[in-house]
Length: 419
Image (cartoon, rainbow, N blue to C red; front, top):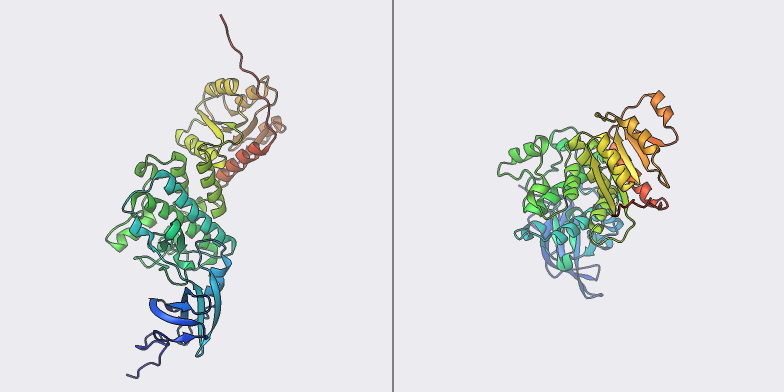
């Protein structure tokens, strides 16, 4: 069999050797990694006297240009991406020069549980990284402890943005999002990329909490089957010291259907920030009342409202008379009412009651679900009606945030009884 020339992927001889100087500037040192697209070396920049990573592309026919990889790393202005210093040709072979990073895979540092504070900061850092990548039109792919480097000063670098210094795939060798495992979408489909990365954020949130990814199993097929079909572990059960509403956010990220996940990484980042800010916040307080006799859904809405705005004080009422008592007692700024509310007072009767209260400024009333056109016309000026569909979560979030930015109302003083 004919020996391949140096620089081909299957050649036993590399295109460069230890001590070679490229472009009169970079002295080749040790090999770091080999990937589908090229081979990465540590090199020393003789002019600036610093270590760099130098990646040479393969000579093989059909190997794509590395310019897209260089642009991908250079576009993301975030510590999660390595800096790119330049590109060139050496003996007709493309090369990229970038920042040399040092650290260990994040997974190797998860034997000791993180404090709640460090955990939230770490998830926030990764969420911001994915947000910045998405805003540049770049997908990350696999987000796990096996594809993230943790280096000095707690810097995290994502494998896909590391110039191949960190693996882009973990032991499974494929994207774990349910829709990919079930073969409903291709992992490379740009239209599916954002939802895939959101699922990855949910996976890393679980891995950071317990040291292993969700559905971790010695059997590869069993692990993939878990991602495709089984309910994920609940963060609140793994870490009781973390905010319950953060657990709800992770559960949202891990939804099996892409359409049931948050709309964007930017939205996830906003909710993570709201949770972190809640401790010791000096923001304006708003009061929100959830009126719903479905306990599970009421709690979901409670969590959404808290994540929408860090200083939201949220209460739940399970029926109309309890809601009327809390309207009188607390004078909430915003009230969400289930249109199918049953009991002594239905949804529209509660709206009429709230509209008749003697307050300096009436609460904003939002009725969720189906309401007849006739009933809508009765409250056209004082009630907002929103459908109970896939967009309900973001409607709730938007209403809470809008309420928080409107001029603050003066509350009616509570009456006191003496003697």
